[in-house]
Image (cartoon, rainbow, N blue to C red; front, side, top):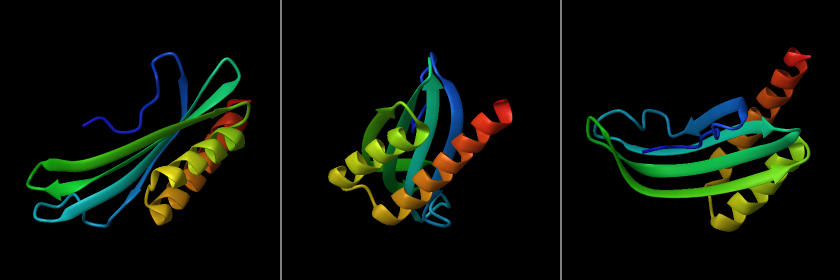
Length: 114
């Protein structure tokens, strides 16, 4: 299954996934939250995707939730997607870790590009 992604028309700034340790090992249950921050024409997009299921030697997805936030800054897009993700019931512990790491990585990517 496709997880959080960067649209073809955007430039990817950060791609982070946080989840259950050993979740993708056969016989285990997985639960992940992936966050991708991207940019296009000075605007920013933050895509959050939560997925869960079981690993049978392949991942058998049992559920998925996705939200997208947009803004004029990385922090604004991340804050909007975080608010929407909380409203959607996305696992808060993984959500906070993934969004904070993606936001930091995206900010660093912009600094490095200058």
